[in-house]
Length: 150
Image (cartoon, rainbow, N blue to C red; front, side, top):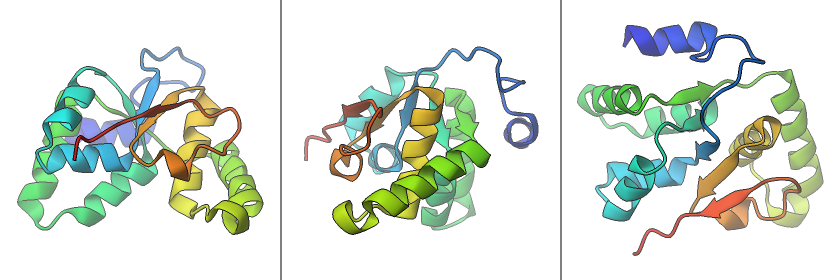
């Protein structure tokens, strides 16, 4: 867990302009499918290592944990996958605010989705999500649809 805290303080990749090796952000829904034991989600995640998540996704996952054991398992999985957690900064916040202002009435844009989309656009990363309807109207956002094979 010390490594996770360290990544929160400094960022796993050091300085902001330092080149990162990941080019994907995985949305909360895909990780939830994984935690529920869905094989297609496991295959998706394991084929895209390492990957990034928004700090919003991290918080959403923590809120869904039922006990400390599940929370600990989540921490271990994130550590094992070498996940980079991207934190919200002023640019991401400004972009997300614009998305909510522009799309809340027309597309029911929610704050969490706006922050996740703004993170992906800000870093030029592709967002993997099963909920592409939450994002498909956002310009300059590259989406890779995850199909959970329900």
